[in-house]
Image: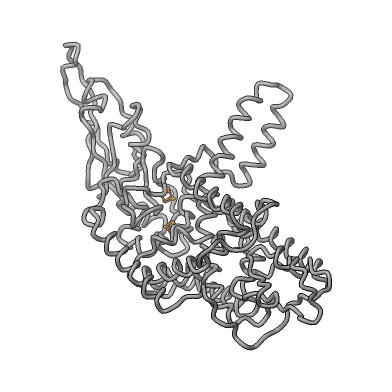
Length: 501
Ligand code: SF4
Ligand code: SF4
């Protein structure tokens, strides 16, 4: 096959990998089986696997597939980055035509190694906060918490606007069935951090304008890990000195800027993503990918002992500061974790992937910004006013790839206490206004009802006397599912609120 044909094959593989990523993303929902594990990409991510196992001090069998990605790096360098990574594909597809060549002044490429080392040292200390910068977690979270809800909202708005036109009703119903049936969650998922997550993702894409694949060259910690393994990769870029006419086309075409004219147009296997752009533009076919057995040399931007020590210091200081923060001393009263997660020590197991939030049918699980402190950034918390823990669902525990949320059976999950409800008598209608309202009692899914109605004779604010049913929480029965808070008919804050147990 010619270089151009190989390059087309690469583009086809990129498209297939991106389609598979989206298919598995859409398939991550309650009760919907996928033909491959829904968390396949996270299982293939060796950075997630190594960090989660270091932090949890345990072997996580599901994440062992990351070894296959490391084996691929030994065989063919950073082929993952050029052929399979869906974020890499998004960067290729959004690359401006006129982006600058060469590196900015300074040792920018070493930033990704620093980030990788800090993540690994922090994981050794039981902290996974910086996995928010893993490329797959960035992409999945953004898709689940920003893109899909936005698509869903736009679809609903378009349907509402067009449904009044009679002949369009049947086609609209068909479109709705097909699109929502394909995985756009029913209802209207809404995420508090959607805009923030979308901005982070947009920033990663926008950096493409500074340099092509800026993220992969300078920042990606997964790329750094694969790059270090690629030092010993067998399949590598090779520029034939006899055939080379020094036209420089390959150096200009290389999206990671690793083809170096000063080194005879050689490429560093740690930086080369095997995209084949260089081989495809070479007028004399001087560029080929050949088998090598000698490890590639260390470059000035590769990790040094000094950088390792600095990263260790940053990780120790960072984890120390996070652990000294008030959030670490006393949990926020609204830190309501998914069923079983609190007892399971979620913080040192959660890789911030967002699978649980995608699968939660009520959108009650939200990425935390402040209630879990900085250490718990973008870990899942239940926000009952936005969505409740459905009594007939145990999906988050089934979807979580690391076991941070334990895979409880439905029966066990129904008994798991995630919070306790309290009534605000100053706002509750029967308490404050002397009028009937039994919504919370009606909604409570616990068989024996954790909310009881006490009939009391009360004097109303207007001076009349009436018998009113006033709700009372039986704390030992309450599991904190939050449906009472979600359904409370008051505007704004509910009159019954769930707090951490
Ligand atoms: S068990 Fe509760 S919190 Fe978890 S996904 Fe289901 S409804 Fe959401
Ligand atoms: S708790 Fe949620 S965000 Fe954390 S690893 Fe599990 S599924 Fe991913």
